[in-house]
Amino acid sequence: MMKILIADSIAPSAVAELKKEFDVVEQHYSPAELLSEIGKYDAVIVRSATKISREVFEAGTQLKVIGRAGVGVDNIDVATATKKGIFVVNSPRASTISVAEMTIALILALGRKVVQASIKTKKGEWPKKEFMGLELFNKKLGFVGCGRIGSEVAVRAIAFGMKPLIYDPYLPPELFLKFGADKITDLGELFEKSDFITIHALLNDETRGMVSDREFELMKPTAYLVNCARGGIVDEEALYVALKEGKIAGAALDVFTVEPAKTHKLFELDNLYVSPHVAASTKEAQERAGRITAEQVRLVLNGEAPEFCVNARDLKQS
Image 1 (cartoon, rainbow, N blue to C red):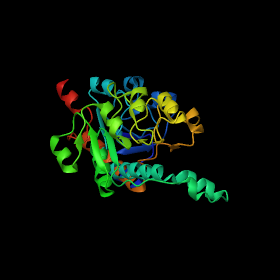
Image 2 (spheres, rainbow, N blue to C red):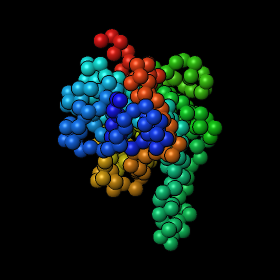
Image 3 (cartoon, helix red, strand yellow):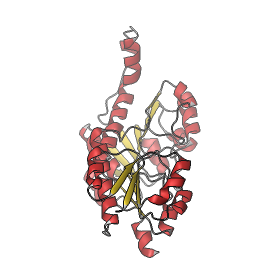
Image 4 (tube, one colour):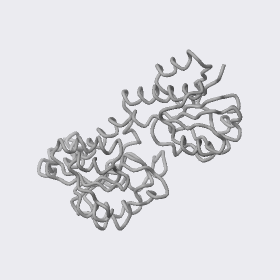
C-alpha cells in the first residue's frame, strides 16, 4: 500500500478519504527529521509550514507527488520536482472567495479607519471628529494582477460602485469588458490614478519588488495599498518610508517578505493594518483546500491525470 505523509494539517474529511485507499501518516517533521523520514513516502501533502527543498527531493526516492493545500508553491522546489518527474499539485480555487472577502474587508477598514476607531473607543475615548472616513462609491480601485482572486474582488468592488483599473498583461480582453474596467498598460499610470491599490499577482522574478519607491511617489497622498497576495511583491522599506512621510494615506498587509513577521519596523506605524497571512484562513476555504488537494494526490497515485498540476506542462516536455 502506498504511503502518504500529511506534514501540515488538512481537513479531517480529506484525511478520512485518503485513508480508504492509502497508508496515511499525519506528522509534522522538523527539517532534519523530514530528510531522514521522507524516503518512506510516495506522496507528501503540505501547507505553507513545511518546506520541500531540493535536499528533500533527493532523499525522497519513492516520491511521486507533492500536494500543496493552497495556491502558492513557493515552499516547494518545483524545478527539482520536475527534473525528477514528480507531480506538484495544489488547490488554486479553494481560497478564492476567502481571500477576495478579506481584501474587501481591508479596503473598507482602511477607508473607515475601523481599527484605530475601535482601539480608541475601547480606551474610553469618543473621537468622532478624528475619524472622518470615505466612501468606496466612485473610487478607483487599481489591480496589480487580476486572476481568479482579483476577478472576485472586482465583482465585489463593482457592487460598492467602485471603478476597476486593471494592470494585467495576461488577462483576456473579454474580462476587461465584463468588469467595465480600464485596461492599464503602464504600472506607474495605475498607481497614479487609483484611490486604492490591491495586489493579486504571483511572486516570481518578474514581480519581486515591483511595488517600490517609484510607485509610492506616484500614488495620491489620499490613496491606500492592500496586499493579500505574496510578501516580496511590495518593497517593505519603500512602503515604510511612504507611510512614515505621508506619501500615501495607509496600507494593509496580510503577507510579508519574511514570515513569520513577529517584529518589523512597519509595526510602529498607525496607518498600517497587518494580519498574520490569514486571508485564506476560513473554515470553508480550509475544507475545500484539503479535499481538493487530497483528490489531486489520489489521482496521481492511481495513475490518473490531476486537474491542478503546477508543473504538468514541463513534465510532459521532459
